[in-house]
Image (tube, rainbow, N blue to C red; front, side, top):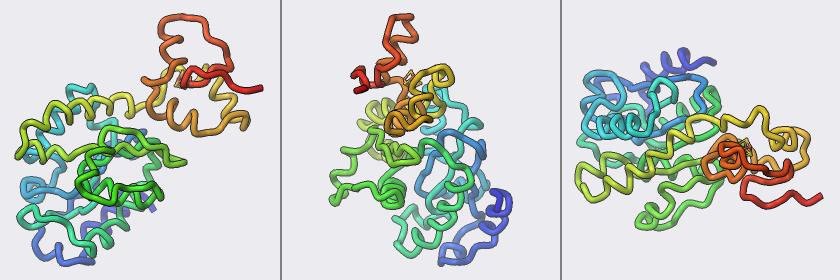
Length: 248
Ligand code: SF4
């Protein structure tokens, strides 16, 4: 299976009732080998008409955030949980999430990203469930997890609010922009990784892989070693990303 073949299947899909009201099936876009995958909820009416991702009002906000963050769209892979527009921008039904989630599963397997960033409640809930990570029971508590990185074994999860929310609540913009700014860091692995002793220790099984997965392939900006390298300051090989020293 390739993304091209998957997208050919997608364009013919009639597994849920949304095929009756869509103009186009909106397939994922961007780098098929990306480090970072961005998963939004569903295309809006502009996307549906023009057959492109993120061209409507909330997409334009996203584009602005990505530009400010320094992330190029062609360097990441962008997709939706639901590939067909939801009439009147209504919430997705469980049957639609179940039908369309199968395509997202295959996209994740094919792209094999190190970080999956989600936009909004439904995409975060689906992805957290997929990786068996606890998800807030109350919808009101979901914003508590936005802007935090979660280690999920083979991948890190980074849930964010959906930019569409800013269209109705302008006061959310500053906080959300701050969360989206982190995408630059999450879109590439640490530039010191190839020469870092932690790579060797991790490959030899001398430390838990979560150290390199979470920091080196995820939030290297929070690594103490990273800043020591940047500033040319001495640090022992045994120093872990949180600044503690490996036990012998
Ligand atoms: S341990 Fe820190 S400095 Fe070394 S590769 Fe990982 S993030 Fe970079």
